[in-house]
Image (tube, rainbow, N blue to C red; front, side, top):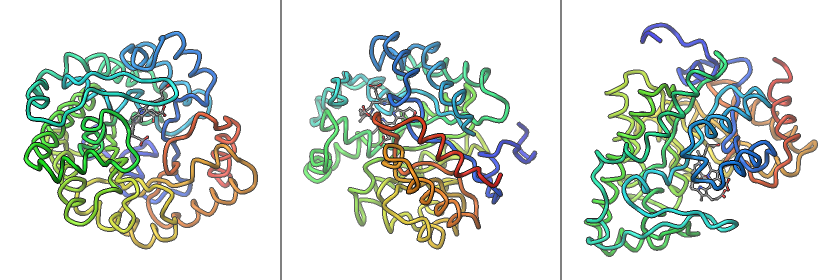
Amino acid sequence: MAQNTPPTKTILRALAGETLPTPPIWMMRQAGRYLPEYKATRAEAGDFLSLCYNPDLATEVTLQPIRRYGFDAAILFADILLVPQALGADLWFVTGEGPRLSTVTTQSDFDKLKPVGDIHETLNPIYQTVRNLAGALPSETTLIGFAGAPWTVATYMIAGQGTKDQGPAHQLRINDNPLFEKLLDLITKATIEYMSAQIEAGAEVMKIFDSWAGSLSGEAFQKYALEPTREITQELKKRHPGIPIIGFPREAGDKYIGFAKATGVDCVALDNSVSADWAAANVQVDGCVQGNLASSHMVTGGQPLVDETRAIVKALSKGPHIFNLGHGITPDANPDNVQLMIDSVREHA
Ligand code: CP3
């Protein structure tokens, strides 16, 4: 697409700041275990990581929710923890528990990591998935690529697993701040190269997932959530002028205010701990917002789902909005509730 032609795809129009009569929709973790067809393809792949690194099967699972529901965007099927793996960390998934990684808590752990330039060796299959998708998606569907934000990725690299309070990462941040900052910088540089390669392969939007941004406050939020997202955004836009970027500083609360201006992202994704009315008044004033239906509605369904969906659409109807959940859909969700959500968003379209 030439730089000066206005976009035609609905997601790109919303990201460019247009207020649309019906918000475009996609859903975090839209390719996932709530779908029987996902479970079948995952079984064929053997395990989750084999699925991520198999371009044919990763393309297939990315397309499944598009075929079933006609979402306005597809999100590349991969994981934020592939970057640590590409940097040399061991990574595996324990069924029913989640990810495990070799830890980085000392200078000698850090010294064993690979240089940024080496990450593509591991990540090449992901770029192939992006190329496949760029050729396979319907012409109206936007392709979103992504990576984890450096702080969130660091919390897993330091603890070696998911943590409730990100305690080990906070400990390193405080007890060995130079090492913590070196690690964050390495992840930031690797993330820029990873996202840049996704864009070159055909991804049209980038999303930066800072799932644990909410555990940083004050100056630490500025330095370790806001600043890395700003650095990545600025560099990507320098290399790929016009590339739209969605930031997701999950659970940032009041710190959602001004986040787009401070980082340069085109859209702020909202979790469901903030109300849509509050977001309209405080965040959407600066541009596009994405969100923010509680994913629990995908389990419980019924009239509360319809009412809450309508309320979010209405509250955010006076500015650019992309409808989404506040966090990923869970494996116990009912696929029929996803259709009910979509119908409720599009009922007047
Ligand atoms: O949204 C999508 O559909 C695109 C693919 C995607 C996955 N993970 C696939 C996945 C994306 C964008 C992610 C991001 C991700 N991964 C985040 C940030 C967003 C968030 O949820 O806060 C984080 C923190 C991770 C790390 C991760 N990956 C964890 C903690 C887990 C285990 C928890 C779980 O849900 O099982 C994963 C596994 C994972 N990533 C699955 C999927 C579909 C489930 C794996 C399976 O099939 O068993």
